[in-house]
Length: 351
Ligand SMILES: NC(=O)c1ccc[n+]([C@@H]2O[C@H](COP(=O)([O-])OP(=O)(O)OC[C@H]3O[C@@H](n4cnc5c(N)ncnc54)[C@H](O)[C@@H]3O)[C@@H](O)[C@H]2O)c1
Ligand SMILES: CC(=O)N[C@H]1[C@@H](OP(=O)(O)OP(=O)(O)OC[C@H]2O[C@@H](n3ccc(=O)[nH]c3=O)[C@H](O)[C@@H]2O)O[C@H](CO)[C@H](O)[C@@H]1O
Image 1 (cartoon, rainbow, N blue to C red):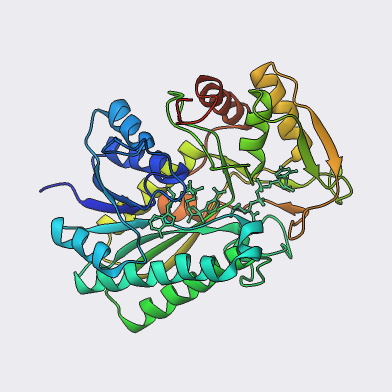
Image 2: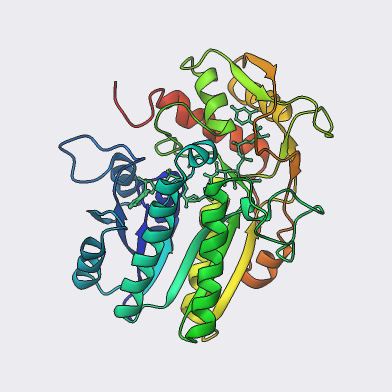
């Protein structure tokens, strides 16, 4: 029996590329689409650089198409070219602050794009779907650790609402047609890089997220980290989050695909992908200084709007239902991030 083929949208991105690597290692065939709006590709290359390196590391081939998932014809052509068995959907815009400034672009890209993808799946009798959701659907946690039973929808940004609205669409879809089997993975705070140091997080422009910003200060690309808020009700006044190693996260996706591949069960399932441990911003700064041997210059400034004080996961359901548990700690997250950033000071672009 030929191994299943997974269509990965956004496969040239940070989480997509790391997950493609683990899917290939697990024996899946992979077809990637990406419009490269947030992924580096040199003009002449056939593959985006991240996927080129994934091929190098695994010795396996990745099929790639430069496709915008909001374009119906482009998406359909991929289903005509390949027999797709399942879809892992990463493609989205994801900058919380930017989404407040240009909400319509976020709703079009993330919602219309997903709807076009789902319609093409149904038209081609593909009903197994893994969705990139986020802890942001929980809004300000009403209790901790956050379980999948925590209320959703009280999102603090248009970005977060695109995640929540899409989950609601997926629930309605599963109710309307019993052929759909959907696993929505609610990521907490993915950080780190593949231990090879060849792939990692390479955001366009100024990083929105903490870890890439710290790494760019350490490597000398940025002067000073701004710590958003030092008056939160937390151990040291700075925000607390559940950071999860990107390879743990990628392995969680393979477990989700294995579940969809092997079970007749259909319907909508949501699982938290986190470690269950919260670290403050200053704890992350100190951990990175230890891992890199570099001093991280930082300044305590006002809170960033939309930030919650503390958020960390109860990930026991994923362990029970997927047989998955995060195993990598914060030191490994920092050591692997530093190996990537110090070997690639300018990310994938060779400047
Ligand atoms: N990084 C995080 O902290 C985090 C946390 C929770 C959820 N997520 C979700 O995980 C997914 C991947 O996030 P990431 O951190 O890898 O981001 P990323 O920007 O590195 O990857 C997203 C990829 O999707 C592509 N893309 C965007 N819009 C597209 C479109 N219309 N058509 C085709 N390709 C398109 C981009 O070019 C990029 O390569 C996103 O859905 C994001 O919302 C990320
Ligand atoms: C709990 C939660 O909803 N997490 C989501 C949220 O991540 P977060 O907003 O939690 O991630 P982040 O890396 O932007 O911030 C993490 C922590 O670092 C702080 N910080 C960040 C950057 C900086 O330059 N200085 C600084 O102090 C920030 O205030 C927070 O306390 O959005 C992400 C997309 O962007 C993902 O969807 C995450 O799942």
